[in-house]
Structure formats: structure tokens, C-alpha cells
Image (cartoon, rainbow, N blue to C red; front, top):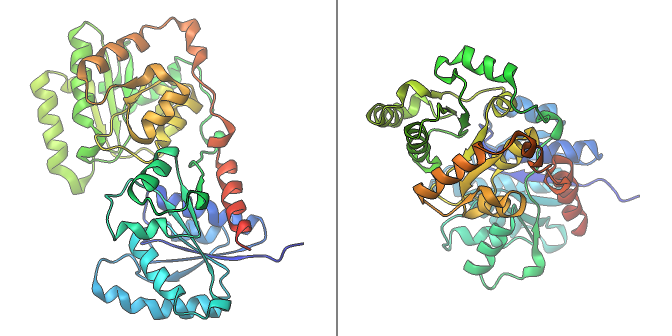
Length: 375
């Protein structure tokens, strides 16, 4: 039987986000398989959740953008040697550079193998190139794989492994459509979400890149056509971005839809939010590497409408082509939204089931297989 591996994951911090979530999911898979999971970061609010997986954490602020961070190369190198690390898995650019320098100060015979995951479509540069230098480079979508090969043509394609981010189907159970109980709960929390018309949902943090203004414009267009549509944007309200929220609220007042709009903090029950909705929007202005909300919505049984670029466009073209909208074409967005909302109830059962390759278990197994390749 192969001996257990010691895998060290590197990332800036453990606050929130897709990189952090994937780190915890792989730490859990390693521990469950009898391997040793180590993580080096500045720590953060997800540290208790990480430790609950059985992983060990080493506090090193390897993501701080400062020349002083170079001083952490030696402590990281010492950590690798003392802990008998077999594989270093870097998930972000600066930690990857610090890890790379630490690795190459060790004797070749004692040097851990180097894996990177490209989680985003970073601007091509010498700084970003480090993410293509892993002995195995995990790409979270075909879109990311194409990005790496296009901008770093010296990368050996045989080192690339496409492993989509996955969801736990049990956390996103399929819900009846419509789901009166879920809608009533949403309306009880936010009166703007009441009424008998369709509910649009745009989940995402409060940043201009998420396309909140596009969603408000869509809401106004649908209501102007006589549809009592409502829009919920959980995650958009952030005290640190009060000026942006005020800008969105002003836009809604100008368009006359402020009474049909709820801009809220993140919800801890996002699956219930999907269940309450009739149409999920993914309108990121910048192409995303994957598009996890697309998979989550499909798992619950809701159609998705999104700009046809990046990982979101890739998923929609594969699973629900009628939801892929030409980029930034507001007229097409309105027409397709109206068409999806008008579909006969009997056709709602055609919302695609999530393929197994987009499950959490599949992502974990595929990542551990990459580690096994480097034994």
C-alpha cells in the first residue's frame, strides 16, 4: 500500500472565497484518505473550519504584497524540511513565488513536488507566469486551460489537468418550482420580494464587476413590459462598499424599480434563495474562471441567464445553451429572460441535472489523483 503523503497548500489567508473553500475541501479529502494536510497562510476566520478537517495550519503571511514577504522564504523552506513535505500546492501568485524560492533552496533529492492551481483569469505577466510553472497545473475549467496555453505558450500541455470546482449535491437539493414556502420566507425577510411575479436572483459580492447595474436594468425592462418581476441581490450589501450600494440604490430609484429590489448582505441559506427564485443571473462584467453559482442553481433546479464569456459561458453552452447571452447585449438579455420566464411549467423539468464531474467528490478525487501522479 502506498505510504501516506504530506501535502502543504499555500494561500494568502483563510477569510472567504473560492480559493479558501477549495483549500478546505482538499484538506478534508487528504485527511479522510489518511494523508497529512498542512496549510500555510496568514490565517483568518476560516481557520477553525480548516482545523476541523484534521489539517495543521502554519501562520505565515505569504500573501502580503511587500518586499518584506521575501523574508518568509527561509521559514517556509525550514517548514518543508522539518515536516517532510512531499507536495507543495500553491493556489495564489505571491505564495507560489515564495514557495518556488523555498523549494529551490532545498537539495534536489529532498525537494517536494510542485503543484499549482489557476483559480482565476489573471492578467498575463511575468508575475502571473509562476502559476503555469507547476509540475502539474490544475485548471478549474477549459476556459482557464485555454488562457494558460494562449498566454504562456511554452507551457507543456501534458502538465495541465482540468479539474472543475465542485459542489456537494446534498447542500443544494432540487426544489419544486415554484417553491411557495421558499418564496414566502424570502418575502418575509425582504418585503420587496413579495408579489406574484417572478423573482430574479443575482448572488455575488458587492463589486462593480458582478454586474449589479445590468441586473437592475433588466428588472426595469421586464417591469416596463408589464411583468411584476422582483430582484434579490444577496451579498451585494457590504459596509465596506457603502458608496457602491448607494449608487445602485440611486440607479433603482431613477429607473423606478427601488420598491421591487432587495440589496442584502450575504445569506447563509443560499440554497433556499435559489429555491425561492425563478431565474438566476450571472452577469459578471469580467470573465470568470469557472461559475460555481451556475452549477448551484442547476442543482436546485433553476434556469440561469448569463453573459456568454469565461467559465460561465462555457458552462451555459454545455448545460443550458438558451441561457448564454451575447456579452453586454441588454436587448438580448431582456428577450431571453422573458422567454425563460414564460416557458411552460411542463418544460421546467428540463433544467439540467448537474453532471458528476461537477460534484465536490469528483473534484477531491481528481486532485488526489494529481498528487498520486507525482509520488
